[in-house]
Image (cartoon, rainbow, N blue to C red; front, side):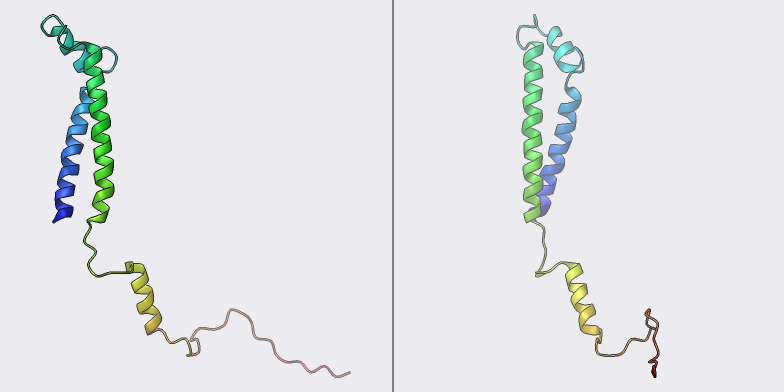
Amino acid sequence: MLYGITISFIILICFLLIVVVLLQPGQREGLSGGLAAGMAGGAAMGARRTADLLSKTTSILAALFLSLSVLANFFIDRGDATQSTIQQQGIENVQTDDFTAPSRTQSAVPQQEDLDIDE
């Protein structure tokens, strides 16, 4: 439940972050260059202030995205598992294998015959 809510906020922040990054100016273009010059006299919000606002908004959204992503890791429902799936499979395989039984495959080391050397 809490994990789903956290993921919803992360998705919302992703969309906002995409919009804010796309609004940032390239070289004298974008929201800060075109819109601020067309405002009433351009005095209400200059190109520099708009760029600063978008830059700060990007930083804040990126920090929120990072912190919510780390926080979402703690909200994942793991059930009662105290071990990873690989560890559990390894334990199951060890319990089913019989290590005292002789191997069914041939040995990779060639067998040597005992030679009696008489002198």
